[in-house]
Length: 287
Image: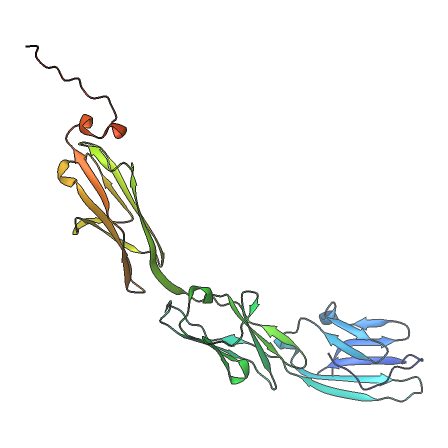
């Protein structure tokens, strides 16, 4: 906002002319009409009572000298000039952070002086706390022992007396887990006849996605991946199955509770509630 020191009068000014770098016309206002330069259409608001001028949507191309010449009703011709500086922002990016063990510093720089800064995480203002430090007049943000809620997007807002600007968003990549591991057996009965097909699925919260290993009675199996399929299962495959998830960024792992699988030689030997066919009758000789 370019504000003049003139006091509004009952008689309008004969003319007001604003120029950029002393040559390019921004606006010329007379008693008859207002003529706005094509580069400034929709970007300015002119206040005829004082000759003041408001700018919007400033860019780096607007840096420079501004002058105003006013002819008042009594013929006097006050003039003025000012220089506009635009503050640009830049954030120092950081990535590959591990939850609860890493810290991060973000720096926002802006040309010109004086300046003030505001940090946003999403739509919320970032304020100082036990984990959050704001230094260097608010231009530097340090987060200690980051959590997944610190992923952003972060924006830095810079202000000066003439304008303000907001940086592009920055998202932090914060690795976490594995956690909340869960092993699901399908079908879920635990007793199976020889030749059955069984599926075990392991799920876990992890960023990046976890790697999986499988164990039978504590011995590691060659299978990997989140699903273990047992096809045409045999009695030798009975035992306690468990899965282990490993995150190669956090270097942490988590192992599930074991799931017991019992393989029986014949379907009719299974507990009655999980039989797939009725048992064969037993014929005894008559004495």
